[in-house]
Length: 428
Image 1 (cartoon, helix red, strand yellow):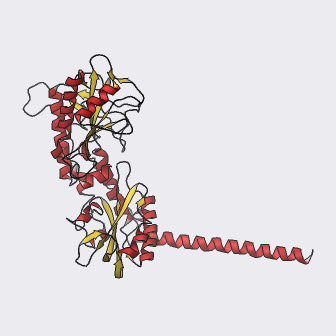
Image 2: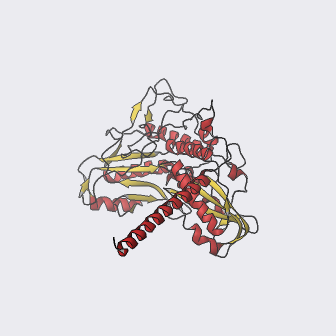
C-alpha cells in the first residue's frame, strides 16, 4: 500500500469522524431545544391516576346552518322539514306545528354544497346555549381558566390593538425585556413569525404611556405580547403547531433580547378545542333559491338585472351585494351564484347565500337577502323555492328569520358578536 493510499484512508477516516461528530452535536442541540420548548413546572397529568378528560359541551345551535361552498360542487346537503322536532311550535301558535329546519351534522369544517332556500337554522330551539362551552374555555385574562402567562401581564383592552391580540380568541405570550425595544430594530425579527399553520400570529407592544399598540417604526416599547389565534373556521391550534410556535418564538425572542413567558400547553390546547367547537357550531350559512317559471334566463340579460339590483360582479362569476353601511371597504351582505360555469349562455336557477356569523345583526342580512330575492322574483318571473323546488312561504321565511335572531343572540352572549372583528377573524 502506497503512502498516497494511506493518506487518502486517513483523510477519509477523519472526514467520517467529523460527520458523525457534527450529527451528534446537531442531535444534542435539537434535543435541548425540544426540552426547553416543552419545559414547564406543572405536574404531568399522564402520571396521575384518577384524572379524567374535561367534559365537552356542545355549542348552542348544534350543527351549522349550512356549509359554505362554491355552487360548482356537486355534493349538496339539503335541509329537511321536521314538524315533530323539539321547539317546532312557535310561541303563541295554535296546535299546528310549524316546521323546523335542520342542517346536516357538522364535521368541524363547512360542509360542501350550495345552501338551500330556507336552509336550516342549525337545530331546534331547545338546544343548549352556546355561551356555556365558550365561557369556561376562552376567557379574558384575570378570570378563571385563563392561561397563566396571560393573567400575569396587562393585556390590551378597549384599544386599537384589540383586533390584533385578543385575549378571548388568542393565546397570548408575553415577551419581557430588561431594556427598551425599538420598533425599527425588532420588526425584522417579528416578521419572521407571522403564521403557524393557518393561524395568524400578531404582536403588540406596551408604549411609554402604558397603552398597548401595534409595533411600528419609531415606536419604543417596554415589553411585547405575541398572540396566536386559537382556532379558525377549519381547525383548532394543535400540539404540533404550538410546539413549533414556541420553538420559533424563542428564536425570535433571542434575536430581540427578550424572554417569552410560555403558557402551559395542556391549558392552551383545551381552550383551542373549546373555541373551535363554538366556531364549528356557529359556522352557519343560509340561502334562498330563485327558480325560473318559464324559459331559462339569458346571462347577458341576467347580469344587467343583477347589476341594476346593486350586485358587484366578481372575477369568478359570482355576484356580491356590498354592505354600503359598513365602516370598512369590502364588507358584504350576501352573495349570489348563477349555478352555472362562466361560459354558460343561460341559467334557470339562482342561489342567494348569507354568511351568517360574518354579517352584523343590525344589518339584517337575512331580511335584506329575502327582500332582494322577492324583487328579483318579480323582475325575472321566478319563484323562491328550496332545494327540492318547493315554494317557500312568507311564514316559513319569517320563522327562519326568528331563528337567525336567536342565533345572533347566542353569539352576542359569547362576546363574539356576528360581524365583529372577532367573528371576522374566526370565520374568515
